[in-house]
Image (cartoon, rainbow, N blue to C red; front, side, top):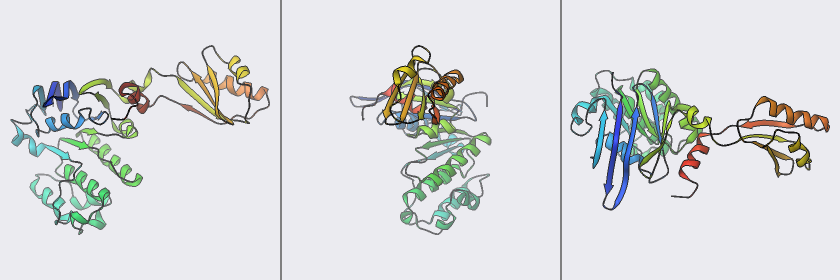
Length: 308
């Protein structure tokens, strides 16, 4: 494939006086996982729906596998998998029946039974869709999106409401899709999910892309590093700070829990200086841990902490 799997340029979408998407651009490279992050109302779902061909943009262009998702919907449909939050199942149909039906329409489907086993759905194969739990519906929706071996998969909040075991099983499926050369575009509110799975991240706010890059690129620069440790309460914080490089601050948020904050990343020299000072005072510093800047830190810096 000599073009991106998804290419969006200057995309706009309005609902009356409300602008949901305001000049958004993004690219999903073939065979990679792109995570679209943003607070509620940022325009993520609207953007994905335009990529899926369910909505027409008011301005800008969308190309999916090199085609127009609206005008070329019939050509794209066999090549694209879509996982919806609502599930999309027939209430009275059995879970296994629905998955096998979709597999029957595909030229080279995955084994439906093996896929259900991988997602922990074997025991629910004969259960009517309406009687499935929320997590089972979510996992079945994922299975339905990928059973036809699509070239591109859109996953909308794929692990919302799942327990830890189901979440990790879903992550394994996404990783396997990537290994198989499938492009995955996912929206999620789980920052850990994006950090673990995504090759590229787009942070969207107010209908615009406010940051683009790999998780490592987005978390590499910016906020201070932190070193935490525990020790007997009441250490001389002024003396400890004086033994450390300029710009480093020391606090005791709770009795016996200490926080050392440095303007840049924590380096081995800082750790050595803290432990040397403690050793000189005959104090054992325990549970030392370095907190690196996370994707959640970046997300909150870019989009704010206010509720939407």
